[in-house]
Length: 500
Image (cartoon, rainbow, N blue to C red; front, top):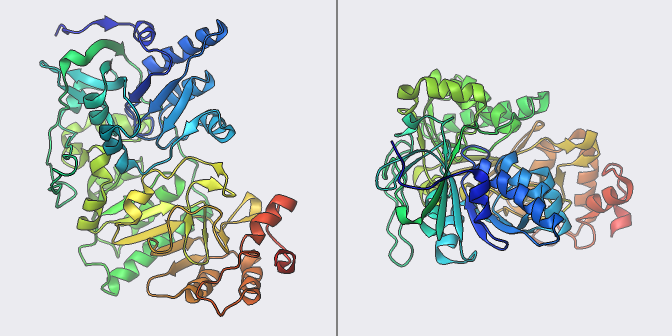
């Protein structure tokens, strides 16, 4: 079909974008991320910088992206502002040096913030599609993210028409955008598999100024392999959920799962999938990884709602090769819907996310190393945690060869408070914090979750502080382990008297 829109090269499209413009790019992880236009834009930035002219743009995405987007633009020092979640190491350095202004926000709140103009004027939407329909409707590819909002709100649109993704992906998406307050109504989703929107994304065809042809696969990479620690964490979570079912605190039909990304998330899903005490389950989550594909094939996972197919090429080809099956078992939604706290609360989601560190009260730090160095961002963990029926955070009990304890007296940065966190898990065990006062929480976490190298010094910490108060906290002492690490490079062997 001849397209009624200008067909340009990536370089020609990039030339239209000016210094200071704000761009909404497709992509939620590297899945479905724009590729050739941002890469060409990075090359333009290098040329402009070489000529002594400034060139930086504001970059909005769905979450992290691929090397041709965040990677190329960061290496060209072409980003002035970035939101939301990111994962590129070069971009991370620029953010932590202050070179890039980074606004870390809950992923479900991003589209509304864009529509209300809270993040500034959106000059461009650069979105990957696998088909352009008559009238201007498009079929998105392996993620939805915030693309519908960017397409509707941007002044001008550049479409990357990617033939590496078949047009047969039509039907895998369910695009629904809620009205904004005060006209908003409920989102009528009552099960993970329910469709409420359209398989195509409608847009104003008059905004389309360029179509750029592309044939590049998603730049998804693998996660770290499983370790004995991550496998044990997965088993601990599965055993806990099975025990909760037996106790009647989770219904016998089970509840939908949300899982974060990475090797811990894969280990947890693997252990749940192998459990003979847990029935077939649904997922209502933000990212699907390779570990979910065999669970769908063998019936352990009956349905998965997500906003992104973050799959290896091998797994993606398996999905493409059997689309009739997967369209019955997978649904892609905008991140405003996949991560919406209203739906999370209604469906009774069990959320399972990863922490950098957590403390003796159950507060969780998901974003900042030693309270100051941004790692990636809060992502969707906050969307799910606060509204979940049961919120679980897990991490290995130590890092850096044991020199860092992931369980500390008080977190160095707080993303999820004790009021939102139900359960914390390490390879050492599980601490169910529900219904327990602060001192009971602290004692349970030390007993069940702290590494043996740190148990005694954590118990000594509790002895040192004033127990006549409600919280086991001291302004002078609670950051002692962090302060010692900055001095010596090791949290072990602390003398609490040095931090009174």
